Image (tube, rainbow, N blue to C red; front, side, top):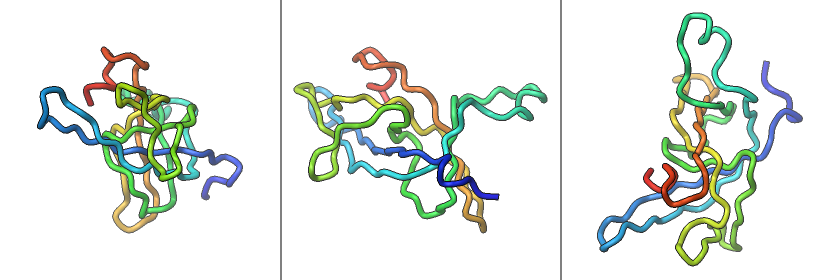
Length: 137
């Protein structure tokens, strides 16, 4: 049975590419994609814990649209709302970083070959400062 519409929430995905051609690396951010999806409240499932497997992701997102444009390493806004300009890109500060940092990063994506279910495992992005892992992805 599919999840009802009231369990879905807005989720934003943003791609990021690193450019090492200059003296210091710069980042190019793609267009923001907004979807309505079901987001888990916890990490993993009970059956994973019962056999001793601990998932390396904090939460997961389930979608019943197989044609969504999501790849590993993308930024994900679940609990925060990104600032988006009129052209659909992130608003950046004077350091060329997003004014609102994402709260999650796509870890892995599980798709069925014939079905339409997509499970996106996401891990927490650790904060807003320059020394954090969000800067080195």
